[in-house]
Length: 398
Image (tube, rainbow, N blue to C red; front, side, top):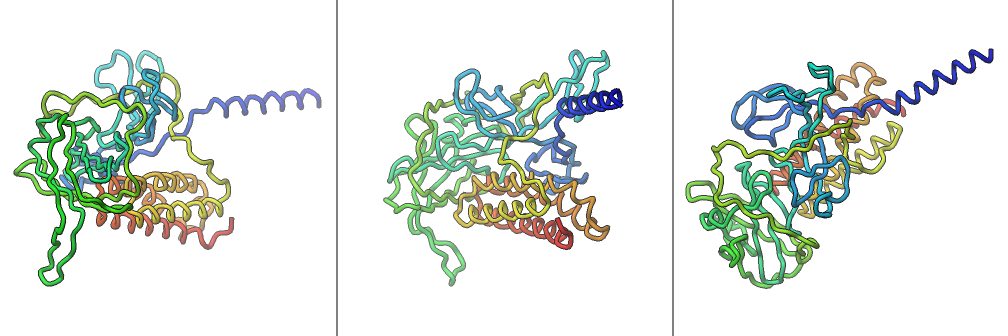
């Protein structure tokens, strides 16, 4: 009897040790467009924008230094090179083998020489949508340009321009742009057009690092619209900003030096920052602990949806990704509970769960554009997916 008890203790200890050493769960494989990385789907197919075949990718959140893009960490903290606070970014996860050219895998495993594959995180295009000057950061519909609007003083609006990796554009690129900031406008029902009652031309700043305009005094919160044409032969794009207070440069802000010339859209993509992962990484950004029961998870999912709604109503589009991604994590945590549903409810829950994950990414992308209409559409799809997932569990007791 004593031997059996001792054996049970050994087995229990071995099971606990195995559980402690078990690698973390990988994020799911999504399908994305090679040319339009903001297009993320749950199933194979073609890109709705360019019709190219979608390719598999593992998307995850990591933390990157705002100055040294090669520093990408598993968790929040400070840069090991400069001490700046790390910022959240979206990366793709792959695994490689030493000495094997073009060897890249979506799964961890073993290389030909028997050594374990080496994981790495690679910053995605549009993966860094963090303001660099304390303003609001948006992505242009051309899926390449990014911009940040700031209100550093009462009568000054400033626009910072970036490429798809959030690197500042050189002065030569700014001089080719035609942009204005509109502080007062109205819709004329008779002509069905928008009349700009107060608009100010944005011109290059003295240091050549931004576009700016002296505007009239506006009471906070102040809503204003920027319309910009990046080149004479390109469309004019609209971006909606809402400032609840004057913007402030982050402490210790360092401007990254601009490249000597603007890289054309059709050129080969620049080298992307990557960070090797020699040990098994933790693949999720630390967040609030998820509840344990199904009922609590469903309540938390509804809470995240409501938080997104508040941000959308306030016009704080750049912040919607936070509760949207938290809702995504809650949906993933609900996946084991799907097996306990009746077949009919399960058939509704499984696609709804996938849609919550997918529309969370889409909502993040829409929020980055700063276009109120597109954000509204994405939020509608997101809430519909959340409702369908909640309804599928409504007949099941926790």
